[in-house]
Image 1 (spheres, one colour):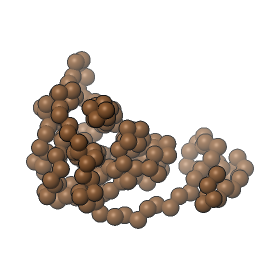
Image 2: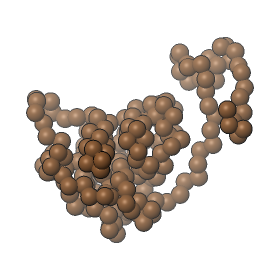
Image 3: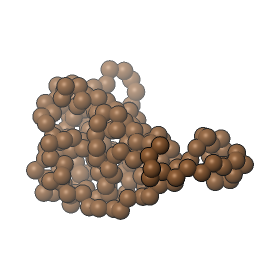
Length: 190
């Protein structure tokens, strides 16, 4: 165990008192929340970054963070109205990935206004994800579970991209869409 981790054993009764879960795991971690720093797009060059516009469900955000970590994405930029990354349900859904992915909260239209990085957006009327030329960097925008990407952010998208529908479902869950985007980008890079 690393020297900077302090371990304290507690009883099951104590664990029940300090956990917000009805059936807690056998361990908990108390961590320092990193200081909030502004996102500067110059640090996102030569990589792919997920950009989340208005994600409200903590489970979705946690799953997106975990998925980003799985596929090697190091940064996620959230709009100011996204659910908090340190919401207990979000933290739980990340399964530890929150410690390896940097999360930023920004005014997206303002941030994207001066972007010299290609901006891809998950839209229903875009080019097929399977025929998209990703290049070697980009900002990948995914929208709110019910409303999609806001019009102000849509205006900043250079490359609209869609996941083709082959069945009859109306939509995909945003976390599932994020996984498909991350997988396709990783496949194209390798």
